[in-house]
Image 1 (spheres, rainbow, N blue to C red):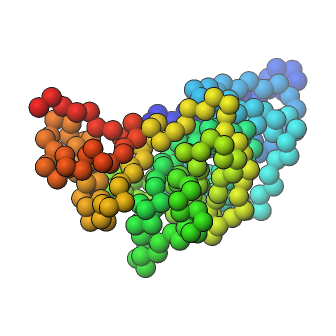
Image 2 (image 1 turned 180 degrees about the vertical axis):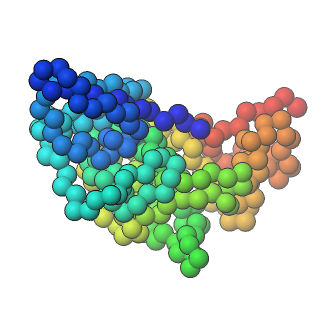
Length: 266
């Protein structure tokens, strides 16, 4: 499980007396921003592990200094939920607003990964059902072949049929086209306006560096599900020998490096 990044904020008065000392979850604090502009001395310790962290702290400092207005909340008592937990309506909207401030699609991908989002192909997304009434996410036909989707994974199970996802915020990103300047957003299962944002000049995001599985068109749904289940089993038990069914399809199934199995010597 990915280690949570922490940030420490210490505030002082003009005479150097410490007013507060807080240790916070960095991703959550970046989402919501500071509650007020602090005009006195301040000390901040952050984790800068990737470009998303750098972009996040720049935006956060601009809010503290008053260069970016703080978001006025109409409700109280609601706290952002940490990565790996279910999101509420306010948190989803906060994430979406924060993503719009990031300079590139690479930063957006990194930030969503930190929050527990994973990539998924359209066919897999449309196979999923949510809730007792078996609701599905309806992706517009014009988006189905163009985008790959980032969705919040609440729980990853040993069996992919038992994975749990939040369908209320889904981000469509065209990983295969670095000329693409738009990403598409589905919020509460409704398509929003496309968000204009370019790729980084030296983008490293790609299908190869993802957790996507792309099945051949001639592989039927039941075969895809069976192969996906065994693939997860093999990832959890690398020494287990794959079945003849799995091996027959393996050359035709494209798997991103993040979930590619290590071939054991036979």
